[in-house]
Length: 169
Length: 175
Length: 186
Image (cartoon, rainbow over all chains, first blue to last red; front, side, top):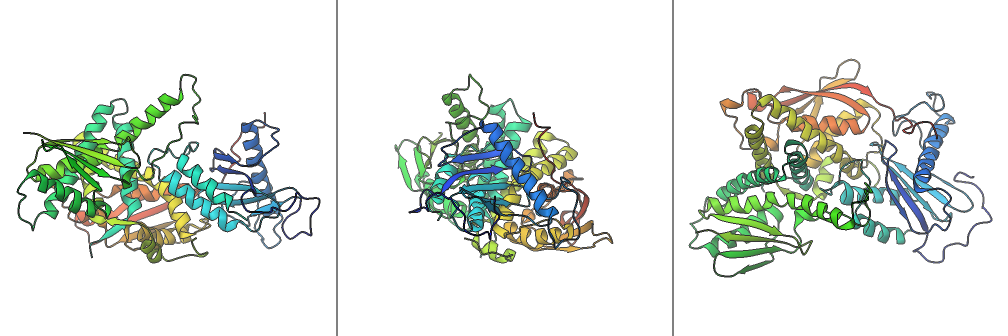
């Protein structure tokens, strides 16, 4: 695994030729670890059931957050590994890249976590994640029939999201 | 210029009002919840109509009053007019808003059911969604009934959402 | 796409969809009146208004964060300021100010001189004890809870009770860090 700023990575899948199929999947979690939304566009390999998969992803992020904060050379105050943090406290990571995929991550102060897994050559997606958060607000939070904290079932959100993600380069 | 607030203030107040009445105050009595929500709309419609007609002459007939709802009241509430008005000329009017704002954010995907109850077929999820959605229509129906009542017209108002995002309000004038 | 960095509440208010405040004010008034009829006890109405506000706050926080681009709410002092200056402006179109900080920085007052909830409202004598704007304190409590801050919000001054401003005391009880939510791996 390589964090951003590493040298060229290989072997890697062929560079995307056109926008439209860079995204593999997306997760949205709330602060309680509930997977509010899972959306998949291109994921040939499934090794776990959905619940295990979501749990593993959440656990990965939780550990990485804790590790990155622990290794922060600029901060004098840091808790022990595994000590709970407030969302947004200390340093936070926003993604990592392997030779086969890239994971982009955003966490809001309200504990909403958005994870987008894409082709390793995709650029900085922080603005895209913010945009997706705005879509989540417009189509999920503002839906009068939506109960906060429950899994999202919204055609409107899915359609808009699919359309937006297709354009991510 | 008249004072304004963010649209989210009204939207979230309405969402919460409907949810309080349906899920907390009258959790197992949807008819009672519906009646209360309609009553709140009625009060609002009555007061708005009072304010907006203060400086104008009375309406000569039912059609004039209905046109006031379609144009003036709707513009104040939604910054647009009713898109289509039909009448059978025997006291029934159908007011259609092609993109009704208060339902603009409503969405439900019947294909996934989180509760995954075996008896819960797609249709019953859809029914539940339709029922929940209908609860949000009592407030605007109440507004129309209240506004017309303030103009001296007694009527019954219902809503039809078979063509979302369009919404039709059916006004049946009594007497 | 929203620009990076904090924006004033003014700019956000100018950019969001807005509606006639009369509708909002009258609707809120009609809800309070209906609650008084249905629940009978003024105390119970206060409680339910607070609960409704809380439920609104836990939803509204995400819109606030998304539109204001605020990326961290760790410091209570900073958070209270941003809620008063940006939050009130962006939703209600009015500015609130923060005063009366205690020495520890865990308790302050939010002062509201202009409040669209009470335009054309006069409380009848039968409503003694009613906190008409109790929904607001609930909204603040709910929103802060979603950013990990457990608070107690109480009214200090109320124009409908003859004071010259609206004033809420916001007291931080504790900050709740994010725990690993699952039980031991099975």
